[in-house]
Image (cartoon, rainbow, N blue to C red; front, side):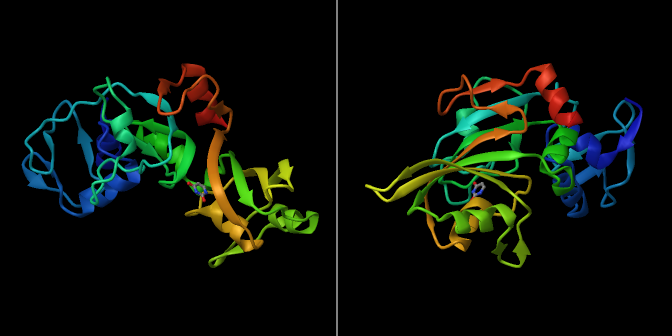
Length: 241
Ligand code: URA
């Protein structure tokens, strides 16, 4: 492995994303050869240095990298531990030893595709805004937005202190009897509750929200609550897109 930056090494050991590991280091939670190290860029050699996390005296070994696609049901939070005791997506990932973490977020009341991994580089690639991964959502809306309102959504709307980038918006259903519609929205950003806020910005509310895909990865063949490993080709595709 040679020498690597401490945060990269920790991320490769499945502790958390590289950015999160930088914080853990800066917070004094990591020791190298018995001394607390707070400089994230510190170079370590796993074959020579003893690296410990949270005083547990565990010598970390890089794990096999794994990549998972989960069909997240409504009612689960996308954190590893939840302070409020709510169900987390980790409860759905049974039978693997690697310490994967959710790649990005889905709201508790949003269902759909969630990726998990223990590969810090992969997590960074998918979550960093500069990589502009495409994400497609299907949203059931209370009411039927007009063409003009849909055009606003496509061109960008103001949410909080931010204007959304152009989005693809397709009408899948307009049910005048029940006054609901279903829209397919493709965005390349991932602000907190972005799709719900976009719908709100044109004067409507979201009834249900589901993420259908992240770049080429879809929910096809996955039952709600179930997961599968991504294939090598899928991982390569995500890393190179
Ligand atoms: N947009 C939302 O509003 N919620 C999500 O969970 C994802 C995107």
